Image 1 (tube, rainbow, N blue to C red):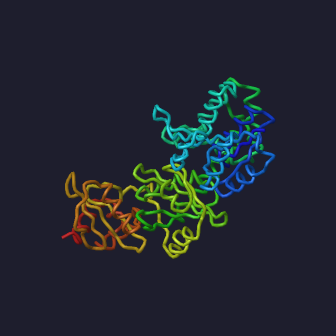
Image 2 (image 1 turned 120 degrees about the horizontal axis):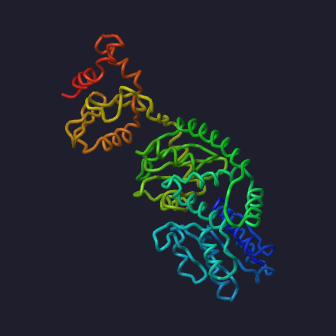
Image 3 (image 1 turned 135 degrees about the horizontal axis):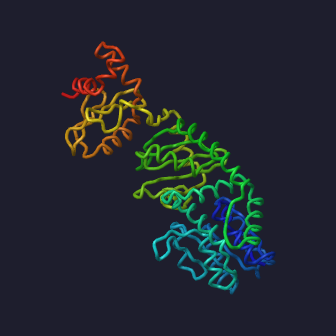
Length: 415
Protein backbone atom coordinates (compact mmCIF):
# COMPACT_ATOMS: atom_id res chain seq x y z
CA UNK A 1 0.00 0.00 0.00
CA UNK A 2 1.17 3.52 -0.85
CA UNK A 3 -0.17 6.16 1.52
CA UNK A 4 -0.02 9.84 0.56
CA UNK A 5 -0.78 12.73 2.89
CA UNK A 6 -1.08 15.96 0.94
CA UNK A 7 -2.57 19.45 1.08
CA UNK A 8 -6.16 20.35 0.18
CA UNK A 9 -5.28 23.01 -2.43
CA UNK A 10 -4.55 22.60 -6.14
CA UNK A 11 -0.88 21.81 -5.54
CA UNK A 12 -1.84 19.16 -3.01
CA UNK A 13 -4.39 17.65 -5.38
CA UNK A 14 -1.78 17.61 -8.14
CA UNK A 15 0.31 15.34 -5.91
CA UNK A 16 -2.73 13.13 -5.35
CA UNK A 17 -3.31 12.78 -9.10
CA UNK A 18 0.34 11.89 -9.68
CA UNK A 19 0.22 9.24 -6.93
CA UNK A 20 -2.83 7.60 -8.51
CA UNK A 21 -1.21 7.62 -11.96
CA UNK A 22 2.01 6.14 -10.58
CA UNK A 23 0.61 3.58 -8.14
CA UNK A 24 -2.91 2.97 -9.43
CA UNK A 25 -5.24 1.18 -7.03
CA UNK A 26 -2.43 0.80 -4.49
CA UNK A 27 -2.51 4.56 -3.86
CA UNK A 28 -4.50 5.76 -0.85
CA UNK A 29 -4.61 9.56 -0.69
CA UNK A 30 -5.59 11.64 2.33
CA UNK A 31 -6.15 15.36 1.72
CA UNK A 32 -5.25 17.29 4.88
CA UNK A 33 -5.11 20.83 6.18
CA UNK A 34 -2.53 22.12 8.65
CA UNK A 35 -5.16 21.47 11.30
CA UNK A 36 -5.79 17.81 10.46
CA UNK A 37 -2.43 16.60 9.13
CA UNK A 38 -0.70 15.70 12.37
CA UNK A 39 -3.57 13.74 13.85
CA UNK A 40 -4.00 11.73 10.65
CA UNK A 41 -0.28 11.01 10.29
CA UNK A 42 0.08 9.99 13.94
CA UNK A 43 -2.94 7.68 13.81
CA UNK A 44 -1.68 6.04 10.64
CA UNK A 45 1.92 5.36 11.65
CA UNK A 46 0.95 4.02 15.07
CA UNK A 47 -1.34 1.39 13.53
CA UNK A 48 0.68 -1.87 13.24
CA UNK A 49 -1.24 -2.77 10.08
CA UNK A 50 0.46 0.14 8.29
CA UNK A 51 4.07 -0.65 9.21
CA UNK A 52 4.72 -2.05 5.73
CA UNK A 53 3.16 0.85 3.86
CA UNK A 54 5.10 3.30 1.77
CA UNK A 55 4.32 6.74 3.20
CA UNK A 56 4.64 10.01 1.28
CA UNK A 57 3.90 13.46 2.67
CA UNK A 58 3.74 16.30 0.15
CA UNK A 59 3.13 20.04 0.34
CA UNK A 60 2.77 19.91 4.14
CA UNK A 61 5.08 19.69 7.15
CA UNK A 62 4.34 17.72 10.31
CA UNK A 63 4.84 19.11 13.82
CA UNK A 64 7.85 18.38 16.01
CA UNK A 65 6.23 15.36 17.68
CA UNK A 66 5.49 13.62 14.39
CA UNK A 67 8.85 14.70 13.01
CA UNK A 68 10.55 12.61 15.71
CA UNK A 69 8.18 9.68 15.15
CA UNK A 70 8.86 9.69 11.41
CA UNK A 71 12.60 9.84 12.05
CA UNK A 72 12.28 6.82 14.34
CA UNK A 73 10.20 5.00 11.72
CA UNK A 74 12.90 5.61 9.11
CA UNK A 75 15.62 4.27 11.45
CA UNK A 76 13.58 1.09 11.80
CA UNK A 77 13.90 0.57 8.04
CA UNK A 78 10.31 1.55 7.24
CA UNK A 79 9.47 3.76 4.28
CA UNK A 80 8.87 7.48 4.64
CA UNK A 81 9.38 10.26 2.09
CA UNK A 82 8.49 13.91 2.62
CA UNK A 83 8.56 16.33 -0.33
CA UNK A 84 7.86 20.01 0.14
CA UNK A 85 8.78 23.43 -1.25
CA UNK A 86 7.95 25.83 1.59
CA UNK A 87 10.88 27.73 3.08
CA UNK A 88 9.37 27.27 6.54
CA UNK A 89 10.07 23.53 6.23
CA UNK A 90 13.73 23.73 5.19
CA UNK A 91 14.93 22.28 8.49
CA UNK A 92 13.55 18.88 7.38
CA UNK A 93 16.47 18.63 4.95
CA UNK A 94 18.49 17.41 7.93
CA UNK A 95 16.81 14.04 7.36
CA UNK A 96 17.60 11.62 4.55
CA UNK A 97 13.89 10.91 4.15
CA UNK A 98 12.94 14.54 3.49
CA UNK A 99 13.46 16.80 0.49
CA UNK A 100 12.48 20.47 0.76
CA UNK A 101 13.44 22.52 -2.29
CA UNK A 102 11.88 25.99 -2.79
CA UNK A 103 13.76 26.72 -6.05
CA UNK A 104 15.37 24.85 -8.92
CA UNK A 105 19.00 25.58 -9.78
CA UNK A 106 17.71 27.84 -12.56
CA UNK A 107 16.06 30.09 -9.97
CA UNK A 108 12.59 28.98 -11.01
CA UNK A 109 10.29 28.37 -8.03
CA UNK A 110 9.09 24.85 -7.34
CA UNK A 111 5.81 23.40 -6.18
CA UNK A 112 5.11 20.09 -4.46
CA UNK A 113 3.47 18.65 -7.58
CA UNK A 114 6.51 19.31 -9.77
CA UNK A 115 8.93 18.00 -7.13
CA UNK A 116 6.88 14.84 -6.54
CA UNK A 117 6.64 14.14 -10.28
CA UNK A 118 10.39 14.67 -10.76
CA UNK A 119 11.15 12.35 -7.84
CA UNK A 120 8.92 9.57 -9.18
CA UNK A 121 10.47 9.98 -12.64
CA UNK A 122 13.96 9.64 -11.18
CA UNK A 123 12.90 6.50 -9.32
CA UNK A 124 11.33 5.00 -12.43
CA UNK A 125 7.91 4.89 -10.73
CA UNK A 126 5.96 6.90 -13.32
CA UNK A 127 6.03 7.18 -17.09
CA UNK A 128 6.47 10.51 -18.84
CA UNK A 129 3.18 12.10 -19.91
CA UNK A 130 3.20 15.35 -21.91
CA UNK A 131 -0.33 16.37 -20.92
CA UNK A 132 0.44 15.73 -17.27
CA UNK A 133 3.62 17.81 -17.50
CA UNK A 134 1.65 20.72 -19.00
CA UNK A 135 -0.84 20.41 -16.15
CA UNK A 136 1.99 20.34 -13.59
CA UNK A 137 3.50 23.53 -15.04
CA UNK A 138 0.15 25.31 -14.71
CA UNK A 139 -0.10 24.14 -11.10
CA UNK A 140 3.45 25.34 -10.42
CA UNK A 141 2.86 28.75 -11.92
CA UNK A 142 -0.35 29.24 -10.01
CA UNK A 143 0.99 28.02 -6.67
CA UNK A 144 4.07 30.28 -6.88
CA UNK A 145 2.10 33.23 -8.35
CA UNK A 146 4.41 33.17 -11.34
CA UNK A 147 1.23 33.15 -13.44
CA UNK A 148 0.55 36.72 -12.34
CA UNK A 149 4.00 37.89 -13.42
CA UNK A 150 3.65 36.02 -16.75
CA UNK A 151 -0.03 36.89 -17.18
CA UNK A 152 -0.69 33.17 -17.67
CA UNK A 153 -4.46 33.22 -17.29
CA UNK A 154 -4.63 29.48 -18.05
CA UNK A 155 -3.01 28.69 -14.69
CA UNK A 156 -5.53 30.83 -12.85
CA UNK A 157 -8.45 29.30 -14.71
CA UNK A 158 -7.24 25.82 -13.81
CA UNK A 159 -7.30 26.76 -10.13
CA UNK A 160 -10.75 28.35 -10.54
CA UNK A 161 -12.02 25.12 -12.09
CA UNK A 162 -10.61 23.17 -9.14
CA UNK A 163 -12.79 25.22 -6.79
CA UNK A 164 -15.88 25.14 -9.02
CA UNK A 165 -15.88 21.35 -9.14
CA UNK A 166 -15.62 19.27 -6.01
CA UNK A 167 -12.32 17.47 -5.49
CA UNK A 168 -13.59 14.09 -6.61
CA UNK A 169 -15.05 15.46 -9.86
CA UNK A 170 -11.91 17.42 -10.68
CA UNK A 171 -9.61 14.50 -9.93
CA UNK A 172 -11.70 12.07 -11.96
CA UNK A 173 -11.85 14.45 -14.94
CA UNK A 174 -8.09 15.05 -14.92
CA UNK A 175 -7.17 11.36 -14.58
CA UNK A 176 -9.44 10.49 -17.49
CA UNK A 177 -7.96 13.30 -19.61
CA UNK A 178 -4.35 12.24 -19.01
CA UNK A 179 -5.22 8.66 -19.88
CA UNK A 180 -7.21 9.40 -23.04
CA UNK A 181 -5.05 12.22 -24.41
CA UNK A 182 -1.47 12.12 -23.07
CA UNK A 183 -0.22 14.42 -25.86
CA UNK A 184 -1.56 17.77 -24.61
CA UNK A 185 -3.57 19.28 -21.78
CA UNK A 186 -6.78 21.20 -22.43
CA UNK A 187 -10.00 22.42 -20.83
CA UNK A 188 -13.31 21.47 -22.39
CA UNK A 189 -15.83 23.92 -23.87
CA UNK A 190 -18.17 23.31 -20.94
CA UNK A 191 -15.40 23.94 -18.42
CA UNK A 192 -14.49 27.21 -20.12
CA UNK A 193 -18.12 28.32 -20.04
CA UNK A 194 -18.29 27.60 -16.30
CA UNK A 195 -15.06 29.53 -15.81
CA UNK A 196 -16.39 32.59 -17.64
CA UNK A 197 -19.40 32.63 -15.32
CA UNK A 198 -17.18 32.16 -12.27
CA UNK A 199 -14.88 35.00 -13.30
CA UNK A 200 -17.82 37.41 -13.32
CA UNK A 201 -18.76 36.24 -9.80
CA UNK A 202 -15.19 36.72 -8.57
CA UNK A 203 -15.02 40.27 -9.94
CA UNK A 204 -18.28 41.19 -8.20
CA UNK A 205 -17.02 39.68 -4.95
CA UNK A 206 -13.71 41.57 -5.12
CA UNK A 207 -15.51 44.85 -5.85
CA UNK A 208 -17.71 44.37 -2.80
CA UNK A 209 -14.91 43.31 -0.46
CA UNK A 210 -12.57 46.12 -1.55
CA UNK A 211 -14.92 48.51 0.27
CA UNK A 212 -14.75 46.50 3.51
CA UNK A 213 -10.99 46.62 4.13
CA UNK A 214 -9.63 48.21 7.30
CA UNK A 215 -6.06 49.39 7.83
CA UNK A 216 -4.10 48.93 11.05
CA UNK A 217 -0.51 49.04 12.28
CA UNK A 218 0.03 45.65 13.93
CA UNK A 219 3.46 44.62 15.18
CA UNK A 220 5.93 46.16 12.69
CA UNK A 221 3.54 46.10 9.70
CA UNK A 222 0.84 48.25 8.14
CA UNK A 223 -1.81 45.63 7.39
CA UNK A 224 -5.07 45.56 5.46
CA UNK A 225 -7.65 43.29 7.10
CA UNK A 226 -10.71 41.80 5.44
CA UNK A 227 -13.22 39.11 6.43
CA UNK A 228 -13.63 36.65 3.58
CA UNK A 229 -14.53 33.00 3.09
CA UNK A 230 -14.03 32.48 -0.64
CA UNK A 231 -11.80 33.47 -3.56
CA UNK A 232 -9.00 34.17 -1.09
CA UNK A 233 -6.10 34.12 -3.54
CA UNK A 234 -7.85 36.33 -6.07
CA UNK A 235 -9.08 38.70 -3.37
CA UNK A 236 -5.70 38.93 -1.65
CA UNK A 237 -3.94 39.64 -4.93
CA UNK A 238 -6.49 42.26 -6.00
CA UNK A 239 -6.44 44.09 -2.64
CA UNK A 240 -2.63 44.16 -2.58
CA UNK A 241 -2.67 45.85 -5.98
CA UNK A 242 -5.49 48.20 -4.99
CA UNK A 243 -3.73 49.22 -1.76
CA UNK A 244 0.01 48.85 -2.53
CA UNK A 245 0.93 51.08 0.44
CA UNK A 246 -0.03 48.21 2.75
CA UNK A 247 2.64 45.69 3.71
CA UNK A 248 0.24 42.77 3.49
CA UNK A 249 -3.40 41.74 3.33
CA UNK A 250 -4.91 39.47 5.98
CA UNK A 251 -7.95 37.43 5.00
CA UNK A 252 -9.93 36.30 8.03
CA UNK A 253 -12.30 33.35 8.01
CA UNK A 254 -13.74 33.44 11.52
CA UNK A 255 -16.15 30.55 11.00
CA UNK A 256 -13.35 28.38 9.61
CA UNK A 257 -10.88 29.71 12.20
CA UNK A 258 -8.26 30.46 9.53
CA UNK A 259 -6.09 33.40 8.52
CA UNK A 260 -4.63 33.96 5.05
CA UNK A 261 -1.58 36.21 4.55
CA UNK A 262 -0.81 37.79 1.17
CA UNK A 263 1.73 40.36 0.00
CA UNK A 264 3.22 41.68 -3.25
CA UNK A 265 6.31 43.19 -1.62
CA UNK A 266 9.67 41.40 -1.83
CA UNK A 267 10.82 42.90 1.47
CA UNK A 268 7.84 41.43 3.36
CA UNK A 269 7.89 37.69 4.19
CA UNK A 270 4.40 36.62 5.21
CA UNK A 271 5.58 33.04 5.77
CA UNK A 272 7.74 34.26 8.65
CA UNK A 273 4.90 36.37 10.00
CA UNK A 274 2.44 33.47 9.78
CA UNK A 275 4.88 31.33 11.81
CA UNK A 276 4.18 33.57 14.81
CA UNK A 277 0.65 32.19 14.80
CA UNK A 278 1.55 28.57 14.12
CA UNK A 279 1.29 28.73 10.34
CA UNK A 280 3.59 28.99 7.35
CA UNK A 281 3.75 28.78 3.58
CA UNK A 282 5.30 30.95 0.89
CA UNK A 283 7.02 34.34 1.36
CA UNK A 284 4.12 36.03 -0.45
CA UNK A 285 1.22 33.69 0.35
CA UNK A 286 0.79 31.87 3.65
CA UNK A 287 -1.81 30.74 6.15
CA UNK A 288 -2.38 29.83 9.77
CA UNK A 289 -5.07 28.77 12.15
CA UNK A 290 -6.85 31.61 13.94
CA UNK A 291 -5.35 31.31 17.39
CA UNK A 292 -6.61 33.25 20.39
CA UNK A 293 -3.73 35.69 19.89
CA UNK A 294 -4.58 36.16 16.21
CA UNK A 295 -8.27 36.69 17.04
CA UNK A 296 -7.36 39.34 19.60
CA UNK A 297 -5.01 41.18 17.23
CA UNK A 298 -6.87 40.91 13.94
CA UNK A 299 -10.53 40.91 15.01
CA UNK A 300 -11.12 42.46 18.43
CA UNK A 301 -8.58 45.28 18.34
CA UNK A 302 -9.53 46.46 14.84
CA UNK A 303 -13.29 45.98 15.11
CA UNK A 304 -14.09 49.69 15.48
CA UNK A 305 -11.74 50.94 12.73
CA UNK A 306 -13.26 52.65 9.68
CA UNK A 307 -12.96 51.05 6.26
CA UNK A 308 -10.66 52.27 3.50
CA UNK A 309 -11.82 53.60 0.18
CA UNK A 310 -10.07 52.73 -3.08
CA UNK A 311 -8.81 55.53 -5.32
CA UNK A 312 -11.24 56.57 -8.06
CA UNK A 313 -10.19 55.33 -11.48
CA UNK A 314 -12.19 57.79 -13.63
CA UNK A 315 -10.99 61.17 -12.37
CA UNK A 316 -10.29 63.83 -14.99
CA UNK A 317 -9.23 66.73 -12.75
CA UNK A 318 -7.81 65.51 -9.43
CA UNK A 319 -5.06 63.35 -10.86
CA UNK A 320 -1.97 61.84 -9.31
CA UNK A 321 1.31 63.69 -9.96
CA UNK A 322 -0.52 66.82 -11.14
CA UNK A 323 1.85 69.79 -11.51
CA UNK A 324 -0.12 72.06 -9.18
CA UNK A 325 -0.99 69.41 -6.59
CA UNK A 326 -3.18 66.40 -5.84
CA UNK A 327 -5.81 66.11 -3.10
CA UNK A 328 -6.53 63.21 -0.71
CA UNK A 329 -9.06 62.59 2.06
CA UNK A 330 -8.46 60.59 5.24
CA UNK A 331 -10.74 58.19 7.11
CA UNK A 332 -11.31 61.07 9.58
CA UNK A 333 -12.38 63.41 6.78
CA UNK A 334 -9.16 65.44 6.84
CA UNK A 335 -7.78 66.83 3.57
CA UNK A 336 -4.21 66.37 2.34
CA UNK A 337 -2.35 67.71 -0.67
CA UNK A 338 0.78 66.45 -2.38
CA UNK A 339 2.56 69.39 -3.99
CA UNK A 340 5.63 69.10 -6.24
CA UNK A 341 8.39 71.44 -5.07
CA UNK A 342 10.82 70.49 -7.83
CA UNK A 343 11.64 67.38 -9.88
CA UNK A 344 13.07 65.56 -6.85
CA UNK A 345 10.99 66.89 -3.97
CA UNK A 346 7.34 66.66 -2.95
CA UNK A 347 5.66 68.35 -0.02
CA UNK A 348 2.71 67.02 1.97
CA UNK A 349 0.19 69.50 3.38
CA UNK A 350 -2.22 67.79 5.75
CA UNK A 351 -5.13 69.43 7.52
CA UNK A 352 -3.73 72.88 6.69
CA UNK A 353 -0.14 72.20 7.84
CA UNK A 354 2.92 71.25 5.84
CA UNK A 355 4.81 68.13 6.93
CA UNK A 356 8.34 69.06 7.97
CA UNK A 357 10.19 66.70 5.62
CA UNK A 358 10.09 66.51 1.83
CA UNK A 359 9.76 63.28 -0.15
CA UNK A 360 11.98 62.38 -3.09
CA UNK A 361 9.16 60.84 -5.15
CA UNK A 362 5.42 61.21 -5.49
CA UNK A 363 5.00 57.54 -4.58
CA UNK A 364 6.81 58.04 -1.27
CA UNK A 365 4.63 61.03 -0.40
CA UNK A 366 1.45 59.14 -1.26
CA UNK A 367 2.59 56.11 0.74
CA UNK A 368 3.16 58.33 3.77
CA UNK A 369 -0.33 59.88 3.49
CA UNK A 370 -2.07 56.56 3.04
CA UNK A 371 -0.22 54.75 5.81
CA UNK A 372 -0.41 57.62 8.29
CA UNK A 373 -3.95 58.85 7.71
CA UNK A 374 -5.70 56.01 5.85
CA UNK A 375 -6.32 58.38 2.94
CA UNK A 376 -7.52 57.92 -0.62
CA UNK A 377 -7.54 60.08 -3.76
CA UNK A 378 -10.51 62.44 -3.61
CA UNK A 379 -13.18 62.25 -6.27
CA UNK A 380 -13.39 65.01 -8.89
CA UNK A 381 -16.87 66.09 -7.82
CA UNK A 382 -15.80 66.70 -4.22
CA UNK A 383 -12.70 68.66 -5.23
CA UNK A 384 -14.59 70.80 -7.73
CA UNK A 385 -17.30 71.55 -5.18
CA UNK A 386 -14.66 72.64 -2.63
CA UNK A 387 -13.06 75.03 -5.12
CA UNK A 388 -16.42 76.48 -6.15
CA UNK A 389 -17.26 77.24 -2.51
CA UNK A 390 -13.76 78.52 -1.64
CA UNK A 391 -13.70 81.05 -4.47
CA UNK A 392 -17.48 81.65 -4.80
CA UNK A 393 -17.61 80.71 -8.47
CA UNK A 394 -19.70 78.36 -10.59
CA UNK A 395 -18.85 74.71 -11.26
CA UNK A 396 -18.24 75.30 -14.99
CA UNK A 397 -15.74 78.04 -14.20
CA UNK A 398 -13.92 75.73 -11.78
CA UNK A 399 -13.56 73.12 -14.49
CA UNK A 400 -12.12 75.71 -16.90
CA UNK A 401 -9.55 76.96 -14.37
CA UNK A 402 -9.08 73.87 -12.23
CA UNK A 403 -5.26 73.71 -12.01
CA UNK A 404 -4.68 77.45 -11.24
CA UNK A 405 -7.45 77.29 -8.61
CA UNK A 406 -5.89 74.24 -6.97
CA UNK A 407 -2.57 76.08 -6.79
CA UNK A 408 -4.24 79.11 -5.22
CA UNK A 409 -6.04 76.93 -2.67
CA UNK A 410 -2.90 75.06 -1.64
CA UNK A 411 -1.01 78.37 -1.38
CA UNK A 412 -3.39 79.37 1.40
CA UNK A 413 -2.19 76.47 3.54
CA UNK A 414 1.40 76.15 2.33
CA UNK A 415 3.08 79.31 3.59
